[in-house]
Amino acid sequence: MEKAYASIISAIGEDLTRPGLADTPKRAAKAFQYLCKGYDEDLDTLVNNAIFPSDNDEMVIVKDIELYSLCEHHLLPFIGKCHVAYLPDGKVLGLSKFARIVDMFARRLQIQENLTKQIADAVLQVTGAKGVAVTIEAKHMCMMMRGVEKQNSVMKSSVMLGRFRENPQTRNEYLSLIAG
Image (cartoon, rainbow, N blue to C red; front, side, top):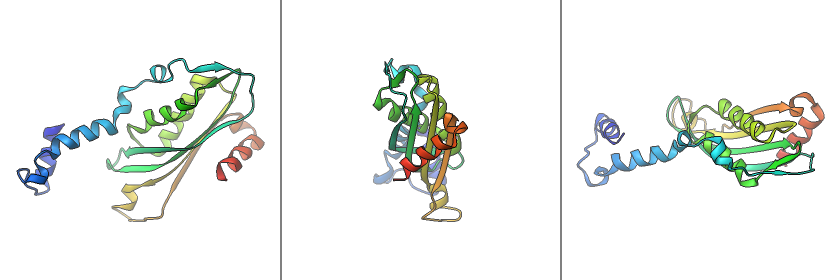
């Protein structure tokens, strides 16, 4: 990967021997590996049995989970926040695991639509919930720094599973709670 970065930097006409760029291929490769570390993670290891019995069957929401991902089309960042809700069915997931699930999928080359679904499916898989809702709001550098260059655009995507999809009242309660 380091050699590939050296080739890219040379291809744009830069001098890899100048002091500011001398170690850039190594640093860039290390950064890219970190930004894509989600490929080295799996859901079972990440959750680590942090599923706990609970009598609660009311909506649980974890709101404003920061996320950083790379657009698979341009390798440019998209940055935003994720809201996750679920309706427990006899068990709840440890709070920090929601952020870890978001990070695991966000730290892969992605499009936001697929990221939203991957998070929702994973939460449903590990919790067995009666319903899961995931909403992501993000700014895409591929739209802000190049192309149409629209600085204030925000993409919103959502996935509703189970009761969130089937019951308009449940969905509307969730949407009103994340709006505030």
